Image 1 (spheres, rainbow, N blue to C red):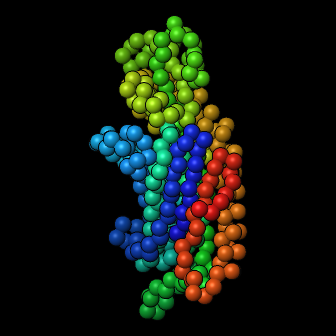
Image 2: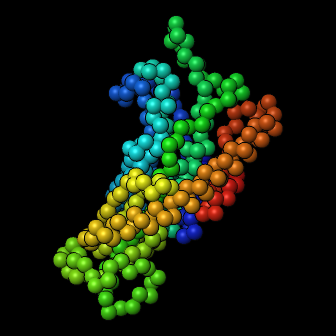
Image 3: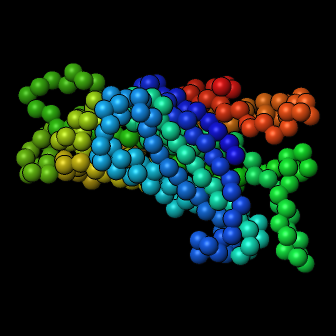
Length: 300
């Protein structure tokens, strides 16, 4: 498997791991495909909300976040599930991606998407041999046969926006982007001005949940839309949603390249480590690496 840690400027930190299990694909109703699942969870002390328990609302939020990330990775073909099949109807890899939020400074799903992508890039799949006569499946060790990288067609990048209703008579002192001059009709039919916030803090996310809206956008580095979700009480006009997609697309290329560069540096370091590793150290797990906004990689 693979592992990676992503850190965002707002203080969010997510650790993602990838576990591989060779399974019978027919049990999942599949024949020539593997399976990818994603889970998302917050550590108990990652934020004040998590420390207080959060209740069912927090659990539902975590479940939905995992589903969004899974749809972005699988539903859009980011992970080539057919390449996970080693023998049709007999053996295929199940890929389990687990994202753990260690620190939640806001927009944790954005950070989780980066960590998950980096962990998948760091994952190496063992070589498998299937006996044509007896059907016996042999999984080779890295020392026996060089493992292969996962086949990834693109990396979904996530951008979270908070839309907050504000009093038009108040000045914009919060640093947000005025979403719409002149106001729009909200969910209750009230004319409001909206404040659009990219990478909202935990407090801003709470305010959006209480009376605003949250927009989550998944895009590729080429601006292709991989996923979109709007939640909250405030009715958001279509042109504002389109603006969120454009903003997300504008920064997706830089972040996607940073993730790939960090993964490449980690892969080179891993090869050197394996070359130097003594015989009694065979079988050590890969070291996770950190992905920051600058794309710098370091073992942790």
